[in-house]
Length: 182
Image 1 (cartoon, one colour):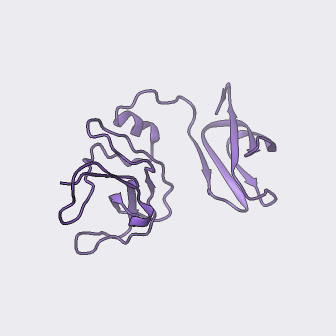
Image 2 (cartoon, rainbow, N blue to C red):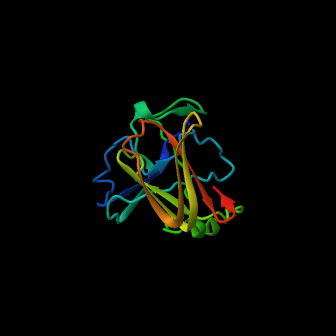
Image 3 (cartoon, rainbow, N blue to C red):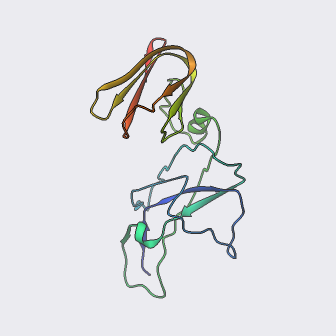
């Protein structure tokens, strides 16, 4: 029997049910997934992600939603007879709106005590909204080269930033809370 390990194992939400007769299309996308090839056969591997819902999802699928051209594999064993597949055991799936509950539920230690922070939309072209579970004292945005491109005193738990004049690219948002940085 041929043993194969693959990457792109992940999670996808859906508004419609799928089953063996109506399989989900290979769209080369998932809500989140691992880019690394999962090869450990003895230990549990944690795959985690964060999703901002863009629809009213009712269904959750776990698997690989990428075609063969977008999936990397490693072959461990002997010859293939009648095709090959990767099989993984799944345990402790948690979907919640509370990330701290999720970390505690899956028994992962070292949860940060920093306030929760959300940036939406991402990617963005005209504005970015920043929301926090705590009061934000200030926001500073740096470009990928570390140059400060925006700074604002906020003293609120939300802020909207006009980014229409920003160049396209990746930016880093640094927030300061009362006595804390993140």
